[in-house]
Amino acid sequence: MAKKVNFNDFSNEELNMKLKDFEKQLIILRMQKNQRMLKDTSQIRKIRKDIARIKTVLNVRKKNA
Image (tube, rainbow, N blue to C red):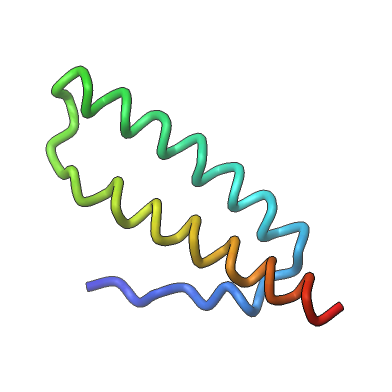
């Protein structure tokens, strides 16, 4: 099992770039799922959780600033 990435180590700019990448990847995975091309549907859940983690880190930083 892969180790979780600690998003606290990234800057806000890097987090925003990763967030956009994850959102694009999520759209692609959803399209593949609808076309019955996606074998591992758990990828969608993992991407959604990573998006939530990034948004949480950004919101905490915004509150503390």
